[in-house]
Image 1: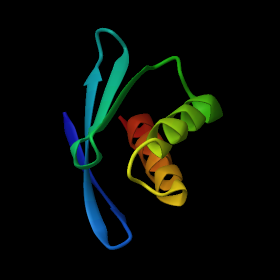
Image 2: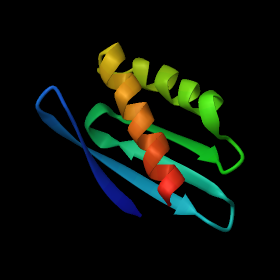
Image 3: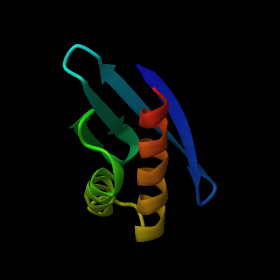
Length: 80
């Protein structure tokens, strides 16, 4: 499991990323906003980014902050 830090509006948010290589999937959680999501290696690109952004918009985050966090999550998981 990897723990990454994201900064938005002067606040630090911890993002927990678990990679299950056997099932070729990721589980991502942000406890501070009570959010989590999972996706497979097959889900990539704009479709995944859009899904993450929509999911994060349903939380306490503003629309711009949700889009930025979704982009960071996508980038971090691509690096793994």
